[in-house]
Length: 83
Image 1 (cartoon, helix red, strand yellow):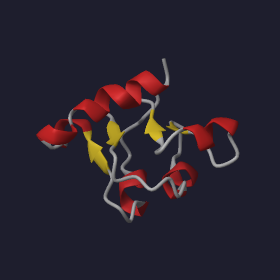
Image 2 (image 1 turned 90 degrees about the vertical axis):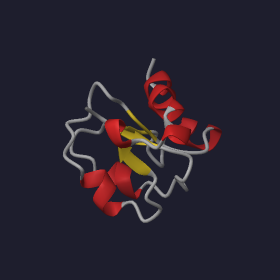
Image 3 (image 1 turned 90 degrees about the horizontal axis):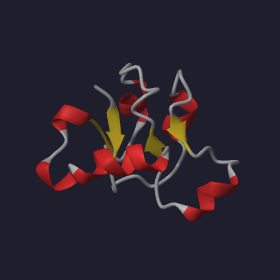
């Protein structure tokens, strides 16, 4: 299981700083940060610790198996960012 960032993300990078494995990208200083509307979680690097969820004030992050039906496509969007 991995966590997934959805469109409620405001790209404040709080979760990026909290991630123990650097599975969330882009970082604030990454040149690609200006080209995307949110951050993404790499499902292959996420260790399911939940630290990102705890710091996200927008509640934009879900465990993949708990994604609401209307947000399910964000699992693939997160994966695609890293491919």
